[in-house]
Image: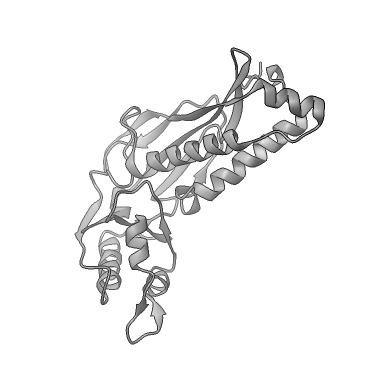
Length: 260
């Protein structure tokens, strides 16, 4: 049985294909965690639990994979008009729902989920915390990242690196470093041999240096983002954008949180 119930929806195959393409495009424009995390899966919608380290060096525990979803409505008049008059169906509601679902994924990755008992990269109790200087002037940001790299090495943490910041901190890094003629962000990217990312789900004045190779962390995907049909409300048709995803941090020392 098709648990997405797509055959029950009054949409053509081409309309479903357009919806799927819109969802993928909207999600790619928003998702940040997937740009640096290794992906484990997709494992399939039937996988509900995975083993995750409970604490640094502690035993593993079975953890439920969070279900993330956002509902949207397609008006029956719009569907009828598209069918009878041959005009395109409006997908604005699809794009809004897909964007919200993608933001839910990043919130789970960075902030965790109290509902599912999952810690995020910003809330890990075992992450290294380092005091940060002023990243808006001088070499404050560069020197702090140097210290962060040294902290990773001291804890024998290796692999690909990424710096993830809130938008306000990211903006501070887009300045020419005096005497170098080089953007501060470019200097840091070269230093970590990785990239700098920004996400609006992080609170202001937030920066994380992560060793993001799969031996340290990954993003487990059960059901990748898709769209299912829910039924009708009155004459209108209800749908949902959904996915199941879980951040698995295998080494909490692989995360450094700068404290401003």
